[in-house]
Image (cartoon, rainbow, N blue to C red; front, top):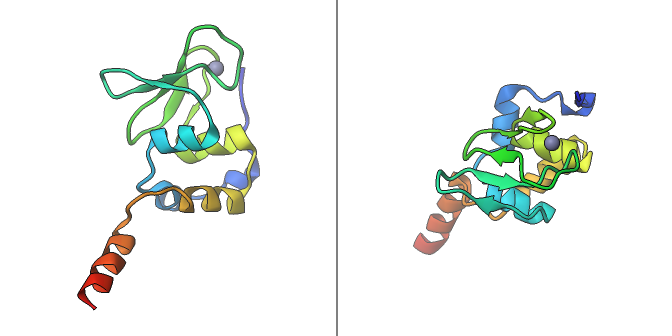
Length: 116
Ligand SMILES: [Zn+2]
């Protein structure tokens, strides 16, 4: 089974990393309402959302991508959210901007605020 990515996902690599920077798989899966469990290795596993199965084949690696060992779909974090939601660029940017991550610019603002 091959899943083709829509042309809406034509970000370059730097832009892709910028958008998902600071986000964790746990936050992403929680926001999408996908049940998962954490293995001792730090890998998250879930029932695949792209094919039907009874034992979890969908693996998410910390600070890396995902892969389903059942249907073979694999990609990065941005690609996962795109495939799962079908969201376009605007949706994806909003999705990640909305996550409660502590980014450097936020931290700087916080420090400036406290100093002022
Ligand atoms: Zn699958």
